[in-house]
Length: 403
Image (cartoon, rainbow, N blue to C red):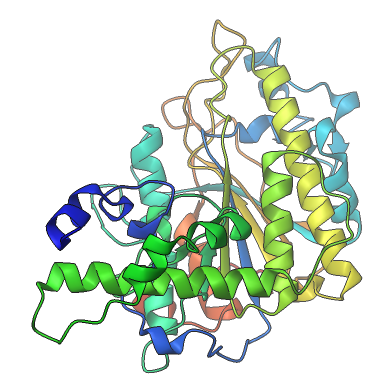
Protein backbone atom coordinates (compact mmCIF):
# COMPACT_ATOMS: atom_id res chain seq x y z
CA UNK A 1 0.00 0.00 0.00
CA UNK A 2 1.53 3.34 -1.00
CA UNK A 3 1.25 6.42 1.17
CA UNK A 4 -1.50 8.03 -0.87
CA UNK A 5 -3.75 4.98 -0.56
CA UNK A 6 -2.83 4.65 3.08
CA UNK A 7 -3.93 8.22 3.77
CA UNK A 8 -7.18 7.67 1.89
CA UNK A 9 -8.12 4.37 3.45
CA UNK A 10 -6.70 4.28 6.95
CA UNK A 11 -8.36 5.33 10.18
CA UNK A 12 -5.89 8.19 10.32
CA UNK A 13 -8.15 10.15 7.97
CA UNK A 14 -11.26 9.70 10.13
CA UNK A 15 -12.41 10.21 13.68
CA UNK A 16 -12.88 6.49 13.95
CA UNK A 17 -12.18 3.85 16.51
CA UNK A 18 -8.40 4.27 16.54
CA UNK A 19 -8.76 7.89 17.69
CA UNK A 20 -5.58 8.95 15.92
CA UNK A 21 -6.71 12.46 14.92
CA UNK A 22 -7.32 13.20 18.57
CA UNK A 23 -3.89 12.17 19.77
CA UNK A 24 -1.10 14.35 20.76
CA UNK A 25 0.27 16.67 18.18
CA UNK A 26 3.89 17.34 18.94
CA UNK A 27 5.39 14.80 21.29
CA UNK A 28 8.73 13.22 20.53
CA UNK A 29 8.51 9.45 20.72
CA UNK A 30 11.46 9.16 23.08
CA UNK A 31 9.73 11.22 25.77
CA UNK A 32 7.12 8.56 26.47
CA UNK A 33 7.59 7.07 29.91
CA UNK A 34 9.60 10.07 31.13
CA UNK A 35 7.13 11.39 33.65
CA UNK A 36 7.13 14.87 35.10
CA UNK A 37 7.21 14.71 38.91
CA UNK A 38 3.60 15.27 40.02
CA UNK A 39 2.72 18.44 41.93
CA UNK A 40 0.28 16.43 44.00
CA UNK A 41 -2.75 18.39 42.80
CA UNK A 42 -5.20 16.92 40.29
CA UNK A 43 -8.32 18.48 38.77
CA UNK A 44 -11.17 16.25 37.57
CA UNK A 45 -13.79 18.03 35.45
CA UNK A 46 -17.27 16.51 35.11
CA UNK A 47 -19.45 18.07 32.40
CA UNK A 48 -23.24 17.60 32.60
CA UNK A 49 -24.15 18.02 28.93
CA UNK A 50 -27.56 19.28 27.91
CA UNK A 51 -28.07 22.08 30.40
CA UNK A 52 -28.82 20.69 33.84
CA UNK A 53 -31.64 22.46 35.71
CA UNK A 54 -29.78 24.12 38.54
CA UNK A 55 -32.90 25.29 40.39
CA UNK A 56 -34.05 21.71 40.88
CA UNK A 57 -30.50 20.63 41.78
CA UNK A 58 -29.70 23.24 44.41
CA UNK A 59 -33.26 24.03 45.41
CA UNK A 60 -34.34 27.42 46.91
CA UNK A 61 -36.83 25.58 49.09
CA UNK A 62 -38.00 28.64 51.06
CA UNK A 63 -38.68 30.80 48.00
CA UNK A 64 -42.36 31.27 47.16
CA UNK A 65 -41.55 32.47 43.65
CA UNK A 66 -39.83 29.17 42.87
CA UNK A 67 -42.98 27.23 43.78
CA UNK A 68 -45.27 29.69 41.99
CA UNK A 69 -43.32 29.44 38.74
CA UNK A 70 -43.01 25.65 38.91
CA UNK A 71 -46.34 24.38 40.16
CA UNK A 72 -45.85 20.75 39.04
CA UNK A 73 -42.08 20.23 38.84
CA UNK A 74 -40.76 22.07 41.91
CA UNK A 75 -39.14 19.89 44.57
CA UNK A 76 -41.33 20.01 47.65
CA UNK A 77 -39.69 21.51 50.75
CA UNK A 78 -40.05 18.39 52.86
CA UNK A 79 -38.10 16.35 50.28
CA UNK A 80 -35.16 18.73 49.93
CA UNK A 81 -31.85 17.82 51.56
CA UNK A 82 -31.02 21.10 53.36
CA UNK A 83 -27.60 22.69 52.98
CA UNK A 84 -28.48 26.09 54.47
CA UNK A 85 -31.62 27.84 55.60
CA UNK A 86 -32.24 28.86 52.00
CA UNK A 87 -31.08 26.07 49.69
CA UNK A 88 -30.79 22.30 49.64
CA UNK A 89 -30.05 19.43 47.30
CA UNK A 90 -32.42 17.40 45.17
CA UNK A 91 -33.51 14.31 47.17
CA UNK A 92 -31.83 11.99 44.65
CA UNK A 93 -28.45 13.42 45.67
CA UNK A 94 -28.19 11.91 49.15
CA UNK A 95 -24.67 10.57 48.45
CA UNK A 96 -23.55 14.11 47.61
CA UNK A 97 -25.24 15.45 50.74
CA UNK A 98 -23.20 12.94 52.74
CA UNK A 99 -20.03 14.32 51.14
CA UNK A 100 -21.18 17.84 51.99
CA UNK A 101 -21.68 16.77 55.61
CA UNK A 102 -18.10 15.43 55.59
CA UNK A 103 -16.88 18.90 54.58
CA UNK A 104 -15.97 17.93 51.00
CA UNK A 105 -18.43 19.98 48.90
CA UNK A 106 -18.49 23.67 47.96
CA UNK A 107 -21.49 25.01 46.03
CA UNK A 108 -21.17 28.12 43.86
CA UNK A 109 -24.46 29.69 42.75
CA UNK A 110 -25.31 32.03 39.86
CA UNK A 111 -22.41 31.06 37.59
CA UNK A 112 -22.58 32.27 34.00
CA UNK A 113 -21.11 34.84 31.61
CA UNK A 114 -22.10 38.13 29.90
CA UNK A 115 -24.50 38.03 26.93
CA UNK A 116 -25.32 34.33 27.36
CA UNK A 117 -26.10 32.05 24.44
CA UNK A 118 -28.88 29.46 24.76
CA UNK A 119 -27.53 27.15 22.06
CA UNK A 120 -26.11 23.94 23.50
CA UNK A 121 -23.22 23.88 21.06
CA UNK A 122 -22.31 27.54 21.27
CA UNK A 123 -22.61 27.79 25.03
CA UNK A 124 -20.53 24.64 25.47
CA UNK A 125 -17.88 26.10 23.17
CA UNK A 126 -17.82 29.23 25.32
CA UNK A 127 -17.37 27.22 28.52
CA UNK A 128 -14.73 24.98 26.93
CA UNK A 129 -12.69 27.76 25.33
CA UNK A 130 -13.24 30.38 28.08
CA UNK A 131 -13.99 32.91 25.34
CA UNK A 132 -16.40 35.83 25.33
CA UNK A 133 -19.79 35.05 23.81
CA UNK A 134 -18.92 37.03 20.66
CA UNK A 135 -15.53 35.40 20.16
CA UNK A 136 -14.77 32.10 18.44
CA UNK A 137 -11.67 30.30 19.67
CA UNK A 138 -10.08 27.13 18.29
CA UNK A 139 -8.30 26.14 21.51
CA UNK A 140 -9.65 25.12 24.90
CA UNK A 141 -8.69 26.34 28.33
CA UNK A 142 -7.35 22.94 29.41
CA UNK A 143 -5.45 22.62 26.13
CA UNK A 144 -3.80 25.99 26.72
CA UNK A 145 -2.96 24.86 30.24
CA UNK A 146 -1.26 21.83 28.67
CA UNK A 147 0.71 24.11 26.35
CA UNK A 148 1.86 26.15 29.34
CA UNK A 149 2.55 23.17 31.60
CA UNK A 150 4.80 21.51 29.02
CA UNK A 151 6.58 24.67 27.87
CA UNK A 152 10.33 24.31 28.17
CA UNK A 153 10.29 20.71 29.39
CA UNK A 154 9.90 17.23 28.00
CA UNK A 155 6.46 17.28 26.41
CA UNK A 156 4.12 15.00 28.29
CA UNK A 157 1.17 13.32 26.60
CA UNK A 158 -0.50 12.43 29.87
CA UNK A 159 -0.74 15.79 31.59
CA UNK A 160 -4.40 16.05 30.49
CA UNK A 161 -6.62 13.03 29.75
CA UNK A 162 -10.24 12.87 28.63
CA UNK A 163 -12.02 9.61 29.38
CA UNK A 164 -13.95 9.39 26.13
CA UNK A 165 -13.55 8.17 22.56
CA UNK A 166 -13.25 11.69 21.16
CA UNK A 167 -11.49 14.80 22.37
CA UNK A 168 -13.44 17.87 23.49
CA UNK A 169 -12.51 21.36 22.36
CA UNK A 170 -11.59 22.11 25.98
CA UNK A 171 -8.62 19.75 25.65
CA UNK A 172 -7.11 21.16 22.46
CA UNK A 173 -4.19 23.57 22.70
CA UNK A 174 -2.15 25.65 20.30
CA UNK A 175 0.84 23.30 20.44
CA UNK A 176 -0.44 20.19 22.17
CA UNK A 177 -3.67 18.28 22.55
CA UNK A 178 -4.87 16.21 25.47
CA UNK A 179 -5.26 12.47 25.22
CA UNK A 180 -8.64 10.78 24.65
CA UNK A 181 -8.87 7.26 26.13
CA UNK A 182 -12.15 5.50 26.87
CA UNK A 183 -10.87 1.94 27.34
CA UNK A 184 -7.09 1.55 27.86
CA UNK A 185 -7.20 -2.20 27.19
CA UNK A 186 -9.18 -1.84 23.96
CA UNK A 187 -6.92 0.93 22.70
CA UNK A 188 -3.85 -1.14 23.54
CA UNK A 189 -5.23 -4.14 21.62
CA UNK A 190 -6.06 -1.98 18.61
CA UNK A 191 -2.48 -0.80 18.39
CA UNK A 192 -1.09 -4.33 18.46
CA UNK A 193 -2.19 -5.15 14.88
CA UNK A 194 0.56 -5.85 12.35
CA UNK A 195 -0.48 -2.94 10.13
CA UNK A 196 -0.41 -0.40 12.95
CA UNK A 197 2.84 -1.53 14.52
CA UNK A 198 4.50 -1.87 11.13
CA UNK A 199 3.53 1.62 10.04
CA UNK A 200 4.57 3.04 13.39
CA UNK A 201 8.13 1.84 12.76
CA UNK A 202 8.49 3.49 9.35
CA UNK A 203 11.34 6.02 9.40
CA UNK A 204 12.02 7.83 6.13
CA UNK A 205 14.87 10.25 5.59
CA UNK A 206 13.94 13.79 6.77
CA UNK A 207 12.71 15.85 3.86
CA UNK A 208 11.87 12.81 1.71
CA UNK A 209 8.18 12.87 2.55
CA UNK A 210 5.49 15.55 2.63
CA UNK A 211 5.10 17.25 5.98
CA UNK A 212 1.52 15.99 6.34
CA UNK A 213 2.60 12.39 5.79
CA UNK A 214 5.48 12.73 8.23
CA UNK A 215 3.07 14.12 10.81
CA UNK A 216 0.68 11.19 10.36
CA UNK A 217 3.43 8.60 10.68
CA UNK A 218 4.78 10.36 13.75
CA UNK A 219 1.29 10.58 15.28
CA UNK A 220 0.76 6.88 14.70
CA UNK A 221 4.04 6.04 16.40
CA UNK A 222 3.10 8.21 19.34
CA UNK A 223 -0.31 6.57 19.55
CA UNK A 224 1.28 3.13 19.86
CA UNK A 225 3.55 4.37 22.67
CA UNK A 226 0.67 6.22 24.35
CA UNK A 227 -1.57 3.17 24.33
CA UNK A 228 1.18 0.95 25.71
CA UNK A 229 2.12 3.40 28.46
CA UNK A 230 -1.44 4.05 29.66
CA UNK A 231 -2.35 0.37 29.55
CA UNK A 232 0.71 -0.62 31.56
CA UNK A 233 0.03 2.10 34.10
CA UNK A 234 -3.65 1.33 34.56
CA UNK A 235 -2.79 -2.28 35.40
CA UNK A 236 -0.83 -1.12 38.45
CA UNK A 237 -3.89 -0.30 40.55
CA UNK A 238 -7.18 -2.19 40.54
CA UNK A 239 -9.86 -0.49 42.55
CA UNK A 240 -11.73 -2.54 45.12
CA UNK A 241 -14.39 0.16 45.44
CA UNK A 242 -17.94 -0.47 44.28
CA UNK A 243 -18.93 1.95 41.54
CA UNK A 244 -22.45 2.24 40.13
CA UNK A 245 -22.90 0.42 36.83
CA UNK A 246 -23.49 3.53 34.75
CA UNK A 247 -21.52 5.65 32.31
CA UNK A 248 -20.16 8.12 34.83
CA UNK A 249 -19.35 5.41 37.36
CA UNK A 250 -17.33 3.49 34.78
CA UNK A 251 -15.46 6.59 33.66
CA UNK A 252 -14.63 7.78 37.16
CA UNK A 253 -13.35 4.29 37.96
CA UNK A 254 -10.87 4.66 35.08
CA UNK A 255 -9.84 8.10 36.37
CA UNK A 256 -9.25 6.67 39.83
CA UNK A 257 -7.16 3.81 38.46
CA UNK A 258 -5.00 6.22 36.48
CA UNK A 259 -4.56 8.57 39.44
CA UNK A 260 -3.66 5.80 41.81
CA UNK A 261 -1.41 4.06 39.30
CA UNK A 262 0.88 7.08 39.25
CA UNK A 263 0.18 8.55 35.81
CA UNK A 264 1.41 12.15 36.06
CA UNK A 265 -1.81 13.73 34.83
CA UNK A 266 -2.91 17.10 36.16
CA UNK A 267 -6.38 17.35 34.58
CA UNK A 268 -8.96 14.69 33.75
CA UNK A 269 -12.12 15.47 31.77
CA UNK A 270 -15.33 13.42 31.86
CA UNK A 271 -18.79 14.15 30.50
CA UNK A 272 -22.26 12.63 30.65
CA UNK A 273 -25.31 13.54 28.58
CA UNK A 274 -29.09 13.64 28.91
CA UNK A 275 -29.77 16.85 30.84
CA UNK A 276 -31.85 18.60 28.15
CA UNK A 277 -35.12 18.21 30.04
CA UNK A 278 -37.77 19.99 27.95
CA UNK A 279 -40.40 17.29 28.61
CA UNK A 280 -41.36 15.47 31.81
CA UNK A 281 -38.29 16.65 33.63
CA UNK A 282 -38.85 15.19 37.08
CA UNK A 283 -38.14 11.53 36.36
CA UNK A 284 -35.31 12.09 33.92
CA UNK A 285 -33.42 14.55 36.09
CA UNK A 286 -33.93 12.44 39.20
CA UNK A 287 -32.38 9.45 37.46
CA UNK A 288 -29.41 11.45 36.17
CA UNK A 289 -28.71 13.27 39.44
CA UNK A 290 -28.84 9.96 41.31
CA UNK A 291 -26.30 8.48 38.89
CA UNK A 292 -24.09 11.53 39.26
CA UNK A 293 -24.20 11.59 43.06
CA UNK A 294 -23.58 7.86 43.43
CA UNK A 295 -20.67 7.88 40.98
CA UNK A 296 -18.99 10.88 42.62
CA UNK A 297 -19.47 9.38 46.08
CA UNK A 298 -17.88 6.11 44.95
CA UNK A 299 -14.98 8.02 43.40
CA UNK A 300 -14.32 10.02 46.55
CA UNK A 301 -14.58 6.88 48.71
CA UNK A 302 -12.08 5.17 46.42
CA UNK A 303 -9.64 8.07 46.81
CA UNK A 304 -10.11 8.01 50.58
CA UNK A 305 -8.77 4.45 50.78
CA UNK A 306 -5.38 5.72 49.64
CA UNK A 307 -5.60 9.11 51.38
CA UNK A 308 -5.90 11.04 48.08
CA UNK A 309 -9.12 13.01 48.69
CA UNK A 310 -7.24 16.20 49.47
CA UNK A 311 -5.08 15.85 46.36
CA UNK A 312 -7.99 15.61 43.91
CA UNK A 313 -10.52 18.36 43.25
CA UNK A 314 -13.61 17.50 41.22
CA UNK A 315 -15.45 20.34 39.47
CA UNK A 316 -18.93 19.84 37.99
CA UNK A 317 -20.55 22.24 35.53
CA UNK A 318 -23.22 22.37 32.81
CA UNK A 319 -23.26 24.67 29.78
CA UNK A 320 -26.29 26.59 31.08
CA UNK A 321 -29.19 26.27 33.49
CA UNK A 322 -32.90 26.29 32.71
CA UNK A 323 -35.51 29.03 32.72
CA UNK A 324 -37.20 29.79 36.03
CA UNK A 325 -40.72 29.20 34.79
CA UNK A 326 -41.63 25.66 33.81
CA UNK A 327 -43.00 25.05 30.31
CA UNK A 328 -46.29 23.46 29.22
CA UNK A 329 -44.67 20.00 28.93
CA UNK A 330 -43.72 19.67 32.59
CA UNK A 331 -40.15 20.53 31.71
CA UNK A 332 -37.89 23.55 31.48
CA UNK A 333 -36.35 25.39 28.55
CA UNK A 334 -32.82 26.66 28.00
CA UNK A 335 -31.74 29.29 30.50
CA UNK A 336 -28.54 30.96 31.62
CA UNK A 337 -26.85 30.99 35.03
CA UNK A 338 -26.32 27.77 36.95
CA UNK A 339 -24.48 26.22 39.89
CA UNK A 340 -21.01 24.68 40.02
CA UNK A 341 -19.83 22.02 42.50
CA UNK A 342 -16.28 21.76 43.83
CA UNK A 343 -15.66 18.49 45.67
CA UNK A 344 -12.56 17.37 47.60
CA UNK A 345 -9.22 19.01 46.98
CA UNK A 346 -8.63 19.94 50.60
CA UNK A 347 -10.97 22.95 50.41
CA UNK A 348 -12.51 24.46 53.57
CA UNK A 349 -15.38 22.64 55.25
CA UNK A 350 -18.87 22.32 53.79
CA UNK A 351 -20.34 25.52 52.52
CA UNK A 352 -22.45 27.30 49.97
CA UNK A 353 -20.03 29.94 48.75
CA UNK A 354 -22.41 32.73 47.75
CA UNK A 355 -25.99 33.94 47.70
CA UNK A 356 -28.94 31.90 46.45
CA UNK A 357 -30.44 32.89 43.07
CA UNK A 358 -32.47 36.10 43.26
CA UNK A 359 -35.81 35.22 41.69
CA UNK A 360 -37.07 38.81 41.94
CA UNK A 361 -34.35 40.17 39.64
CA UNK A 362 -34.44 38.07 36.51
CA UNK A 363 -33.02 38.93 33.10
CA UNK A 364 -35.64 38.17 30.43
CA UNK A 365 -37.07 35.47 32.68
CA UNK A 366 -33.69 33.95 33.44
CA UNK A 367 -31.37 33.95 36.42
CA UNK A 368 -28.85 36.77 36.46
CA UNK A 369 -25.27 35.60 36.83
CA UNK A 370 -23.06 37.06 39.56
CA UNK A 371 -19.99 34.84 39.10
CA UNK A 372 -18.26 34.61 35.72
CA UNK A 373 -17.26 30.99 35.16
CA UNK A 374 -13.80 32.21 34.16
CA UNK A 375 -13.32 33.51 37.70
CA UNK A 376 -13.56 29.87 38.81
CA UNK A 377 -11.15 28.76 36.06
CA UNK A 378 -8.69 31.48 37.07
CA UNK A 379 -8.81 30.34 40.68
CA UNK A 380 -8.32 26.69 39.80
CA UNK A 381 -5.46 27.46 37.44
CA UNK A 382 -3.60 29.89 39.71
CA UNK A 383 -4.38 28.76 43.24
CA UNK A 384 -4.83 25.04 42.72
CA UNK A 385 -2.70 24.00 39.73
CA UNK A 386 -0.10 26.74 40.10
CA UNK A 387 -0.41 27.92 36.49
CA UNK A 388 -0.39 31.35 34.86
CA UNK A 389 -4.13 31.99 34.65
CA UNK A 390 -3.75 35.30 32.80
CA UNK A 391 -1.68 33.76 30.01
CA UNK A 392 -4.06 30.82 29.68
CA UNK A 393 -7.33 32.78 29.84
CA UNK A 394 -6.06 35.77 27.90
CA UNK A 395 -6.77 38.35 30.60
CA UNK A 396 -7.12 38.76 34.34
CA UNK A 397 -10.27 37.51 36.04
CA UNK A 398 -10.82 38.14 39.72
CA UNK A 399 -10.68 34.83 41.52
CA UNK A 400 -13.23 33.36 43.89
CA UNK A 401 -12.25 32.60 47.46
CA UNK A 402 -12.35 28.82 47.53
CA UNK A 403 -9.24 28.35 49.67
